[in-house]
Image 1 (cartoon, rainbow, N blue to C red):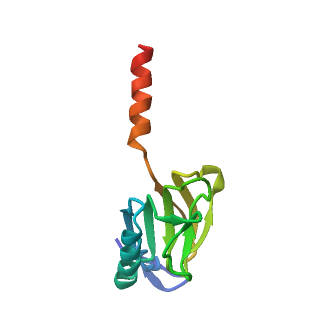
Image 2: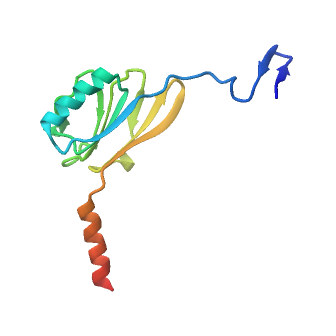
Amino acid sequence: MDQTDNSRKRIIRGHENTKQQAPIRCMQINLQHSRVATDNIMKLMKQEKKDMIFIQEPYLYQNKIAGKIKSHQNYISHEDKSRAAIIITNSKIDAVIIKQFSNPDHVLLELRYNNTRFIAASMYFDITKEIEREMDEIEEI
């Protein structure tokens, strides 16, 4: 159903009136702490023009993602042996790490892109911790 907005002399059709934003192109991978896999994903990111990559088990050297291109923004918790990271290649994406919810296994970012704010998270879930927790619960019974 079309409506005429007399004050602006335009046709409004539901949400067609909203400005279309360029999508954010993302990918996700578990690198299993491999330097070769890290090098390959950096090449792939450049070839496929990805804006963000969510990484589990990154290859770290001196608590930094090894092989990362310097112009890319990278986010890890900067605690012992981080197992989650986010790399942003698009310079138009502004990001701030939310430290209260980030730890070696979780990285949470507040992002701003084209006047839109949203949250992004990269999380690593350790299956051995889950099994240990379940075993402890069984022993209590």
